[in-house]
Length: 88
Length: 286
Image (cartoon, rainbow over all chains, first blue to last red; front, side):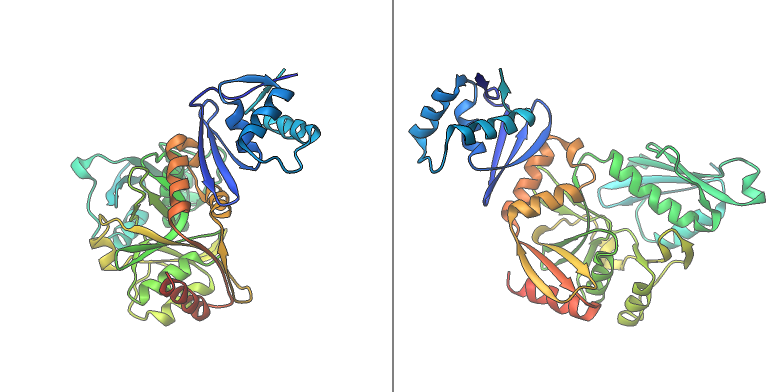
């Protein structure tokens, strides 16, 4: 399974306390995301990668607390449903 | 249309036409002192017309037409034509206005800073705005807050304040010299009466103000004041905006800026006096 993130410049991010407001330019939709969704989107922006590569990319920039592969797959599925990540 | 009025309210202008004289005369009284549209060009057109020609005489009714219409909207009795005109102006704004982010909110100003109060119908925002105006705050509007995307400033849109049921008497008692439009009994929202906007609200309608506090009032509840996080305020204000989606990226930037820069408070209050005292307390703590 490979995951493709939004194109560079497709998202506007505005951190608001515990959440991040995200505006998706191609669809005009607004999303309010909690961690780790904004970090996943940042790692995937302009790229496509598999789960192992994504785990490694997230671990390089963040301390992963309780981040199992199963949790990550769940979050990616949610981002896929929201139209922010392409899953194939 | 045989009878017409053109008027400008802050940055927005309207032309309203009717085949009956009475609603236009009522609008002239409510909007006395408002300027005409610049160069006689209106942003929005509203028509109050009889649904069928004979209805004008047999059972007078009025239906609303204009640049934007709600298909299937029921006509109102002709005696409520003033309400129809106000609703039609709101509809044109909600569906057609793109220059500002529109929040369904009442706004008042003091010392160059704006207090933006938003909430569902019945939350008491119009009543609070009228009571605050009675105490010297400048009324900037009771229906829409207009937030400029480029500056973040709130622009005034001071139309007559629509007061319902018991709030009419409450405002009368607090402000004996206030002027009102005709009583509109038996409307879908009960008895409605419009408070004429105070003279300084009309004179200063072109003076914007920097938002300083966002308030989510709730009338009829035990008194409580609670700070609202920027994320919660963002969600509530997207719901309170009539054109957030249509504004696209500009709406997102205007709204995120607003909730980042301006503190927000949820205020439950049991009556007008308690509400006023709580607003003043929140304002003093800024």
